[in-house]
Image (tube, rainbow, N blue to C red):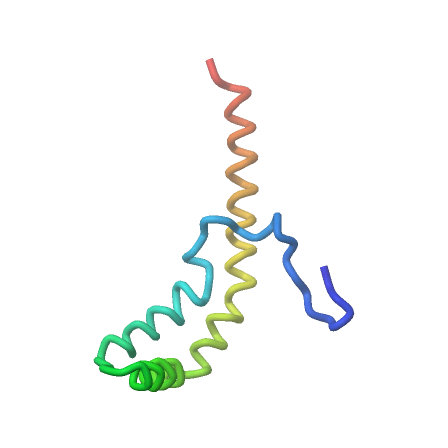
Length: 97
């Protein structure tokens, strides 16, 4: 589905559910972000804001870009595997004793 802006969206029903390993934020950004934050121990709210901003900014943009660009192919792989599993399930129902 494309909008008038030219941006393609995945219909809600086609989003792979229960697949956090496919989300670039889950498998890439949050791990790097948590690692950057774990090295710091802020003692004030302003210090926390500074640590969070510096932690996020320490993640190389190229790593995030690569992770985001891989998302589309990862989703396709999951959808394809689910389709195969679904077909195998239907097929196996015909041969139950």
